[in-house]
Length: 220
Image (tube, rainbow, N blue to C red):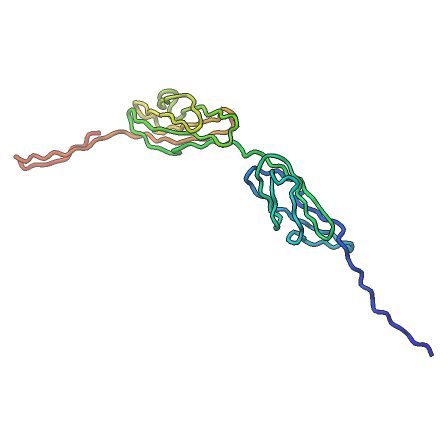
């Protein structure tokens, strides 16, 4: 009689075929961070997230570095290739680091100035301006134009240099103006301050000691 022999089933071992790093192309500013993900594709068609087990590298660490979790820190303007390696297989992505955008800020952003002739010092700061172009200043208001909105001590200033706003003799209606600083280097970059205009007043009290009367008079 014959003997039947049974062989145990053979399980195919899957192997890693490729690694896709995403985003595959990205641009960020200096000082920003960017997470990357590594997805492995295996011989059986399955996929697996390999971000935490991959060895991450940057081809230009002067531009950007990347940590073990796949998060990039941008250090300088330039380009670099971010790589992920696992089980002898590698994947990569292209990273471009750009200069941070030019920005204008005004201090103070709001102010109350008394009429007539009250003053307020204002400073515009321009950040990330390689040309150091400073700003130009304009005054506007829904109820005024020109000197009826007030006057400025200078039409332009360097970044960080103060100018002085002087209120008009009479209040426009409504009693408010807007002071706008515009970058000389990039005139699409502006910042504004809102100035409320108020009437000056004084108060004084008199006491008539001899007559025993007292009172208060308000002069507006």
